[in-house]
Image (cartoon, rainbow, N blue to C red; front, side, top):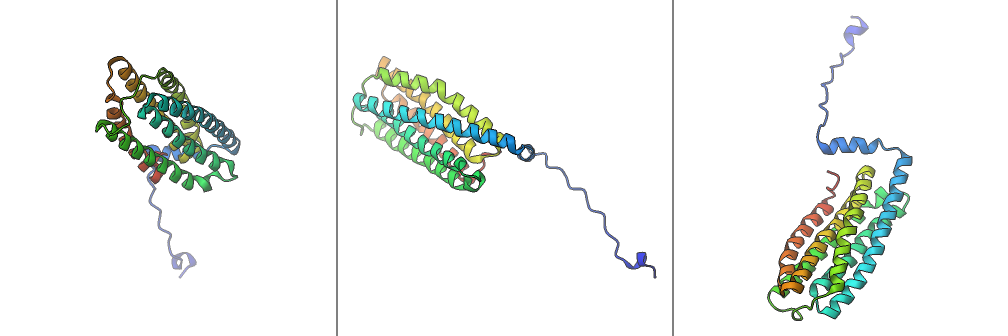
Length: 233
């Protein structure tokens, strides 16, 4: 018997179907990014996170101060939301301060998820208390609050979009999750602005807690997504 006849024949391998899902395509694109480009993107994320932290610190101080003066739970809640956003952005800054950001991503995502859950819990409790009349009384009109909400409504979408683009190209779930936290601030800014304007014009103090409950539901959804690390898709 010849050698060719005694040796086992190798069976042809079946062709593997290519994955055509958006997640697979995005993953292939991300892996093609060279190290130099990744360094540029990581530096961009750090700068955007630093800008977000700086603005949110200022926003928190102004909102809480103006809310205390006007007895506005909406403004105070908006300021506390800024504090939560600082915690989320700080987690991403900590992640990208290390030599291997990917190794720290899971912890950063957990912090961001908890930030979403804490925000949702606070907004829900304060909204229900306001609707039931258990708050500190009817809030007074606040010109400072209206200006602050309008500024945030203009600034935050740009910061969120820039960080989301860089995070997606870099393949960083935590950077994308933090950009969604910033985008949520845009929604809260719109709700706050609407509530403050309606209260100033018509005395409708119930408007902002009603819409804030919708924002709380969105925050819970985003928190669950960040916890599972699904922002890449």
